[in-house]
Image (tube, rainbow, N blue to C red):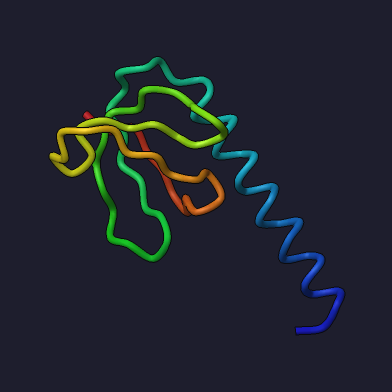
Length: 81
C-alpha cells in the first residue's frame, strides 16, 4: 500500500468510527442493538453508553457483565427488537 492509499484508509476508518460513535450517541441507554466488530459474527447486546471512549454493552450474547468495545473496531450496527 502506498502512502496515499494509507492516508485515505486512515481517513475512511476514522470517519467510519466517528459515524458509528455519533449514531450510538443518539441512542437511549437500554436500546437493544446488533453489531458486527473485528471480523466476529454479528452479536446482540444492550447499549448502555460510553466510558473512556469505549462503547459499553450489557447482556452481550447473554454474557451477564459489562462489555467494552472500541468504536473503531465496529463495522456495522443496527437497532434490534
